[in-house]
Length: 317
Image 1 (cartoon, one colour):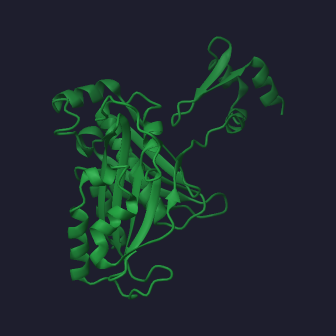
Image 2 (tube, helix red, strand yellow):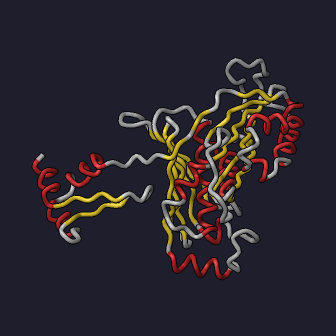
Image 3 (cartoon, helix red, strand yellow):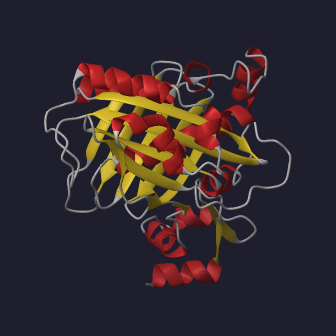
């Protein structure tokens, strides 16, 4: 839960993804830390704290997973369930633009939180309480003329990271270690994550063996990952590379070019014009309020207004 203190100042050690590998074994990883980006996305909406924390974690997972894939387009992570939070969605473009939102039933969520004691920190409700039964899906969309890649897994386990670990283990047969945390630093929402994957083949420019890391190396990496604390992951004053060295120096950790992230929605007035133009004018007229059609972006909460004259221009074109 964010503490009500002075707002956090921007940090060069936040809002980034840092790729790395362990030279001794070829295990690959990413460390993501979100500060201002997470806070900007979360505070666009009035989310109850447990839901805000879960969406923060989803943003970190989206950044981590997308950075481990080669694509030119949009990577999306989405949950759909029968619980109080019917839908959560986050996506990141290949340029590093991140956004996310959650759709929820306020009455059902309040009842679920009351049944959990309403404690957002101790005994924080998890996937089952907030999302219910359903699925988690991720999609890579590289635009028209390309085939979309999608993976789907049931919502099982207490956390989103557990669902994704199950997917990689069962569907991709890739051993994956995931650590994701969220919380408040200096009054602002933050999140962070650490992912390791045991995959064959060396990273570019590496002399690591091409075969998958052996079991001993993988177990050792999992122990080192588990030793990383929540405070270390979230601390914007602890340099990311210093943290990686602290954890994995005995394994010969090697870092690659980091990737900066920012909070940016893809909505625009021009895109909405195209959407409205594709709908019958009579249906649009029924949506008017005080003589205007008002469209609110679910992600960034920005409102777009179209009066009669604007609609005339849209349909005239």
